[in-house]
Structure formats: C-alpha cells, structure tokens
Length: 265
Image: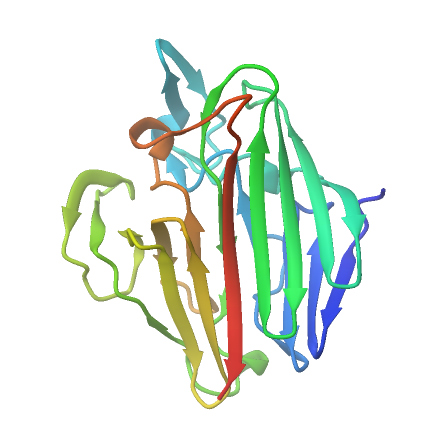
C-alpha cells in the first residue's frame, strides 16, 4: 500500500496519520478542535530504536561500540524512524497499521510495526520491534506535541498533573546523571520514573481533560516551549541504550502501548 496520508474517524474524533513523514500522527481533532501542534516536525512521532538523547551518539553492545549520526550535537536524538517513510500495511475506518524496516545508520536489521487505533474517546498507539537475525538493544516511545492553548490562542493554558516516584537528575548536557531526586516543579525537560505505569493528565480548563497512560515506567515531560507541551511515555530513560537497554531477540520483540483518553469539561 502507499504511504499517503490516512484519516481515521470515530464519533466526532478524527486522527490524521502520516506514514510518509516518520509514521507520525499529524493531527488529532476532537469535536473539530485540534489537540496537536501542527507542522512537519510536530504532531506525534514514534521514537525508535531509541528515545531521547544518546550521549555523544555512541552506545555499546557488548564489546562493540556503535556511532549514530549527531542530529542534535553533541548527541544523537529520538531514533531514526521519525526521518523515514513508513509503509501502510492495513487501514480500516478507525485503525491503521504501519511498518518500518530498520536500516542504516542503525547497525541491526529488524522491523517496527505501529498500530494506531482511534475510538470515540481515546487514541491507542502500539509499537513493536522484531528481529529475525541478531539480537540488539533498543527503546521505543512516543513524542507528542500537545497544543498549549486550544483553538489557535483563545482559552486558558494547559495544566499538567502527575505523581512520579522520582525525577532523573539532569546534567548540564540534558542527560540523566544517574542520580534519582525528588520531583521538582517545572518548567521541565526531564525524565521521571513511574514504576506503576505512566499516568499524566493534561487539562485545558473548561474544555477538555486528556489522560496519557502506559504500562511503561518512564516518561519525559517537556514544557519549556511557548506553543506546546510534550508528554513522552517510553521504555527507558534518555541515554537508555547505555544505561537501561531492552533487548530485542528473535524470540522476544520489544513492545509498548500508550493510550490517550479524553473527556469534555
């Protein structure tokens, strides 16, 4: 199938999926109101085969050290799949299945599958990384850009509520130092631990409440930008290929799911 844009609908919810632009969700509208920041680099993109920054773009696999391109010097950031065209495997009115084959500069072969499922009150995203060859370390996650204010500037600023068990201490290089500290007030560009699963609520006062959940224990929250805020569930912390890698093997894929559920206020 082609990688042309896909529109999913369920009730008054509508999602635009862009296989040709990194497999990202280009838009999510509820009752005609756009929730995601618009633009070629925004929406919500899958982070794979790693999330956030890798220190100096280097990660080890046993005795072998691999170098990734420094697309956020001096680090590598957010994986390779967001810069690639994905293939559309299947589409129905409310669900799309996309695939992406890992290739250079990633040094291992594998396939990524993303399922985008829309309901009247929720969007569920699922990622799976499989290999039929060598095992390798990997991470997956999502990087949504939620509009800070709905309807292009009218209304109140969004609020973010969550109760993490800890915050990863952030070094001057924006990477975790390895120390866990008490969660601090924002603004944030920080990683938090939620061992019982990610659970973050965004509230646009008088308009909409949206709950981001995932079974995964890590979330990065970024709210230093004027236009949007990011709540990023992921399978490991930034630089996690070096500090907390998950192994993809021929017998065990790496899978993760996040659900955004909403209600009107």
